[in-house]
Length: 218
Ligand SMILES: C[S@@+](CC[C@H](N)C(=O)[O-])C[C@H]1O[C@@H](n2cnc3c(N)ncnc32)[C@H](O)[C@@H]1O
Image (cartoon, rainbow, N blue to C red; front, side):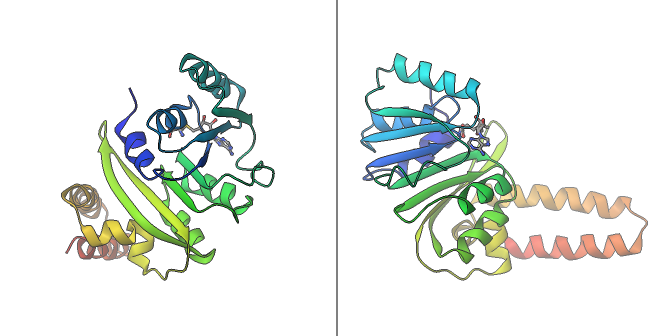
């Protein structure tokens, strides 16, 4: 069974042709995307042997070896040789790792990227903004008590505010109940921290952050 996070991310691949799933681990996403007919073929890549072995086994179990190629590679270093790849997914990695991978990749032929940073998503959005990628969709979801952000982008320009960089332009605009729940949790933690500190400087900084968070869900 594919997770809700991967299922939602895969919906954004519909109509594309050749997927590169970087950090594929068990290759669950490319297998699902091919079986559903969202893409026609895929590369499942990882920089470690063990995950790639799981990917190979799963692909064989699903009899998809003709359609999904496995590649042992750091990041997307193979994209200059695979110039018909038109869509990329990088899911379940920290924001700085995603940025590092993207900044070293040959992305000119890529029409769409679906990214799911586990942390520091602001860094990913800053990279996209300054490298002429435009966010065209976003999803904020919760699975197994964890909150996730899925960012979908295509070539184009965008100018984001500070809050949009941190929370996501579409997520911030939608202000879903789930997003409000997440921010309320952060507000609760901050309120507790403010009560517990005796340091005036720290208290001032935390209060500013609290006001910032409150504004984000207004
Ligand atoms: C937490 S798993 C996520 C698996 C899957 N993408 C998902 O979201 O369920 C992260 C995977 O990324 C791989 N990985 C980490 N850094 C990488 C890099 N620089 N290049 C390629 N793969 C990487 C890891 O080996 C691991 O299999």
